[in-house]
Image (cartoon, rainbow, N blue to C red; front, side, top):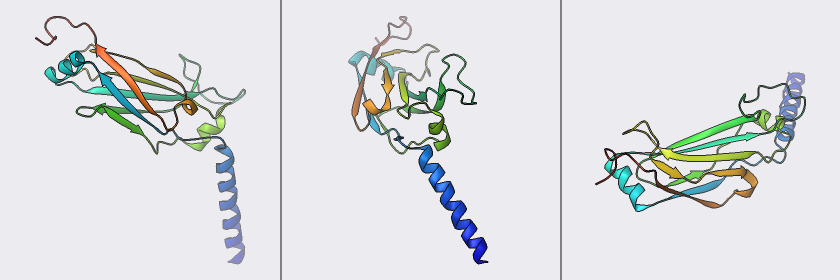
Length: 163
């Protein structure tokens, strides 16, 4: 019985050490995002009962020789993504969003990157109605910050524009 306990403790310790070494230098994303919309954009959203989509995509470059599947369009390794649909609020918090440590261990640099896009929910029209800035860059440059993305209304056909 004691041998079994010792083996269990040793195997648990090895898993713990392997997990820690896989995530050295890794920090889960932690930042706030505020949307700043023009009056026209706000009026259009309200008039059309539209939502706003905040779409974050996290990625990095894989180590040379890593035996993994890369994104066919970008050639990058996808860590994951997070999408929020906003109706009344204009703020989003990115906290406690972690990736599998094995994914971080595959990266050539643990300072992975993020792309954040914002667009309308397309409930009233198949077209996006918002023209918003995007955020793209290393997560280390936005950690623990309050970010702002500005949005305006894309020119809409007369049938969907507010009067």
